[in-house]
Length: 170
Image 1 (cartoon, rainbow, N blue to C red):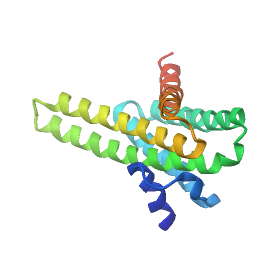
Image 2 (image 1 turned 90 degrees about the vertical axis):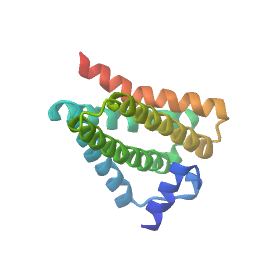
Image 3 (image 1 turned 180 degrees about the vertical axis):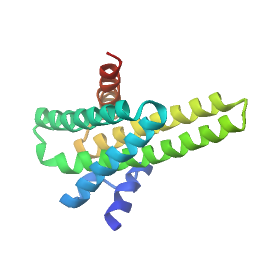
């Protein structure tokens, strides 16, 4: 539990992922939670079968993007720390997204006239926060400059969300 709290504090831009050493079981639990929470969110938005496939593609893209980045930078020894840090923070954001989906459902049922504005604002906030967290993790772990870490985090977001989404539209 202590390790989880340390990883979650990355979501508030505290701690350094280089100081965190996840166990194998902790890493597998992060991946399983990533898959389950992603399938829940995608299942609420679209068809559960399509959502499951998209989340699986996202996981593959995430792990391969992290591996490729670290191979290019010759820092592959950070793989476990980097993917665990990103996945734990993304799991936290996904949990908030599930709560956002529940809020959207309640607003639809209550015929709230500001439902779209609230839902879109919440989505933009969560995506922006996610990119900021990944940028922080890149900056701390890989010692990137601020601009490079933001560009890398945005690129990572496009690779892990955009490409699977495009694939699903084909």
